[in-house]
Image 1 (cartoon, rainbow, N blue to C red):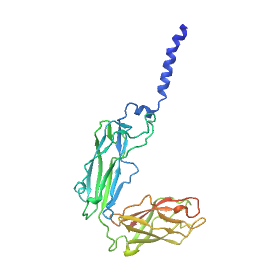
Image 2 (spheres, helix red, strand yellow):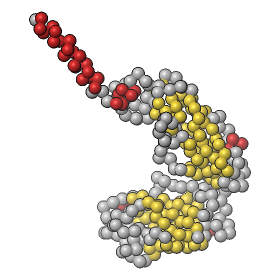
Image 3 (tube, rainbow, N blue to C red):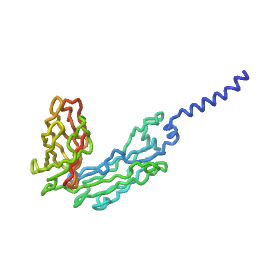
Length: 306
């Protein structure tokens, strides 16, 4: 019995050390440190968020809260910093603060602290309808500056999380004259072909012409999958309420039927402030057309004025 008593504490110590070493880095990171973390803008945001007086909507810029729990309301402070075209603070009534209610913000429960399942994503709202007159593009930065909780920082020290979001508001676009018309260079910035050949020939010159009621639409012609068909397809898009609305194009190419290219409705873009470049978001194999076993493959076409 005497020998057993001597060995037992040593075994207990071994078990204790082993149990501690088994904790994950994430568990240790969040243990007893619920109000330590950072805020940032979503990394999926575009470099520039564009709005237009032709569509006086509210631009909502989400703020990611990378903090497990806050025991008090988290007050996030931000600035609207002018870049060009005027001072945004003269147009918008923003208070410079948003509030995230106290509670769990980034994991699903006290025993599951390694996930980041955001329960709340507060937004900084930019109400375009507050602008009455705009003679040139208004460009400004939304800059996260501070929080009311000392352990919650703007960004994370030593890391490059986004804490600045650029916004551009376009004046009303007039389609009179020669805007969005003439020669453009077509490039394909994203969306490789499934057939290991270009969807459209990069660097070709296309010509935009007016079409539709009152000339509010534009169209151009370009060969689709030129390795298989040299026949140019007619591509059409319109400017409606400050948005680029893309029409469907039934091509002359396909596996079991004709492939249709149409609008990527999950990524509808605003009308650009000028006609120097136009980005078009398409779905290749729209709704499974073509009989090639794929559906709604995102592709982009960029038109740059010559």
